[in-house]
Amino acid sequence: MDELFLFQFPSIPNPQNETPQYKVLDYVVPVDGSGNTHLYSSMGSGAAGNDDDDDNGEKKKLMHRDVERQRRQEMATLYASLRNLLPLEYTKGKRAISDHMNGTVMYIKYLQKRVSELSYKRDELKKVLNSSGFDHGMSSDGAVLSTAVVHQSLDGGVEVVISTGFGARALTLSRVLELLVQEGLDVVSCVSTRIHGGLAHTIQSEVTDLTLVDVPRLEQKLSEEISSLNRIS
Image 1 (cartoon, one colour):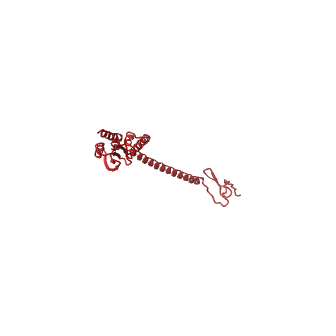
Image 2 (cartoon, rainbow, N blue to C red):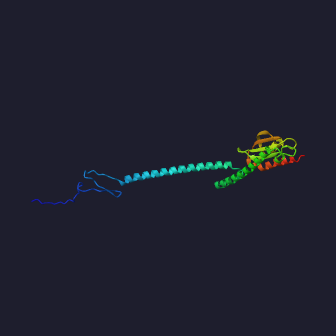
């Protein structure tokens, strides 16, 4: 009788009876009844979503950076334009933008004051030009008294308006031009208009650096010249 040998083999699980588990980032993926394995990788979908978020974030950062750079460039251009409009004494030795802004405020106040002064002088000059008697700018013998008004023109030059009569006490145009040249001004035009008993001269002049011209001092010199002529009997 043959000997009977009994071998015991470990049981091998049937893949059809058991459901294999694939663990991908803590997600268990079963196999359906058809035997087809469906892999849903959370790593794949999550990574794609994260990539999109990262791309959007980078795009926003780049856009913000471009907008900020453009804003800084525009502000730098505006500050440079403002600085060029200010006279040298308001910006000399000052580098900070805050100093330039303070200088701008001071310059605006100065211009407002000058506008008020010039408006007053303009009104006084109109009274002289429209006068017809001693009480409104004429001497006792009927001659028009000379007057002078000096101010900065809009184009950066200096404008001088002189009203004068005739005779020995009249301020001559040649003397006015001589005084302007002494102050470093280049005369570019002169218009003379006949008024009641005299002439009105409007002189336009240019200067390389307006800060070198003392406009109030020039007006004072012209007034002193007129006063000296009025003392002539």
